[in-house]
Amino acid sequence: MARTSFLGDLVSNLYGLSRWPLGGDRRSIEDLCRALLSSAGEVAGLRLAASIFGRYQQMTTEEKFAFFTFLNEELDVDAAKVAGLAQAYSEDPSTENFSALVRAAEPRRQELFRRLHEVPEATAALVAARLDLLDMLRDHPELKRTDMDLVHLLRSWFNRGFLTIQQIDWNTSATLLEKVVAYEAVHEIHDWDDLRRRLHPADRRCFAFFHPAMPDEPLIFVEVALTKGVPGSIQGLLADEREALAAEEANTAVFYSISNCQKGLKGISFGNFLIKQVVTELSQELPGLNTFVTLSPMPGLNRWLKTLDGDAKAARLLAGEASEAEAEALAARYLLEARRPDGFPRDPVARFHLGNGAIIHDVHAGADISENGMNQSSGMMVNYLYDRGQTEKNHEAFTGEKKIAASRGVRGKVRSDRGGTPATPPVPETAD
Image 1: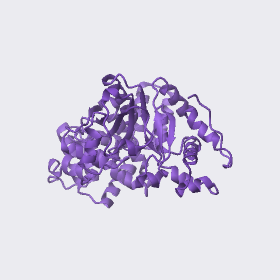
Image 2 (image 1 turned 120 degrees about the vertical axis):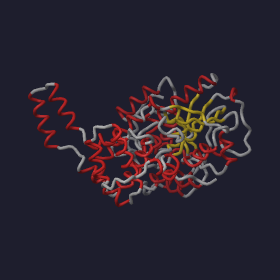
Image 3 (image 1 turned 90 degrees about the vertical axis):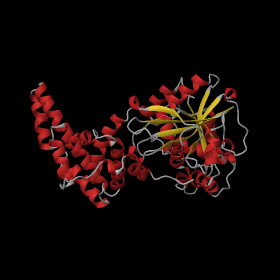
Image 4 (image 1 turned 135 degrees about the vertical axis):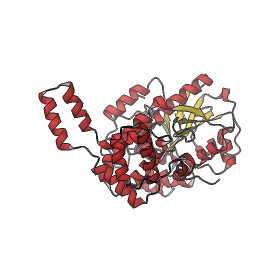
């Protein structure tokens, strides 16, 4: 099945150029922005905002960089003015001084973004513009100030109160189903038959979050398998000829793929809300479900293994020659001990689930033998368990003290592997 282009879809389907004609206004985009910021009339403001979006869509990469530089420099805060107002407020904390300080401390580009956002379908356009900005940040980190302001507003526009959950099934529109195929980021969907196996059987579910300003674009979706017991292999979960289970017979819900769809919303997390909402939805539909787990990749495992110079077991795992016990012990060490300089786990998927209050439940060798699974983690996968009675406690311990919640079984794999392995930092002890 052909994959769709994220940016192409936004331009051609969501807010086509015909909706925002350039008209006869020959001013530069910078002058249009200055005029919008000074405009008092609603109709004139909307016309200016539409002209800015129309002009932006016609710009080259170099022109867009110049535009973001304008936002970053000319529409920044006046630091000297803010310092003076802060001093005045410290000497006289009046309402007038407070109001003046707050107004001055906000970059003018934030007000520009708010006024641009008043145009119909502007939300998707700003998300697409941020995708351009993210591409520039790698070579121009000074533009991060503008990105921080845009993210600040996007977080308020995309807060949980505005999001709606929708179940996606085989009867969902073909347009939306094609986007599920295009946005699947964990386990590639190869064709319509593969998609049908994930959506149609009674023991499969898929849920997505949508925003009313982008009703045809999923923000994030999760694929769920209903099983008996906790699975240890994605091959078995997605097998072509597997026998479907009656939903009422399942006791476990497995979140086996979570895909963020809008790259322009990077850094704005929806996954925590979606998992909690799906747990609620499934618990109401199927009271017999008593276990909620993931079957997750470890995308940074092989990169970490390559840093273990002289570790024979790591070398064997990378070469595909490690025993199952050796592989699982190394994976457990990675999840429990490989840390970033800030003390949080090195693995991004671990940071996500542990930050949501899950615990590391089990690790599995040979769980994903796809090309991607072997390249990233030598076929290893992990279950994160969501115990609704412990998630808040685990979340607080992780975010506040960087403690990792893990089962005795996972910790036991590390302890049993201690003989003959290099010394590593101690693992913080947490309750199961």
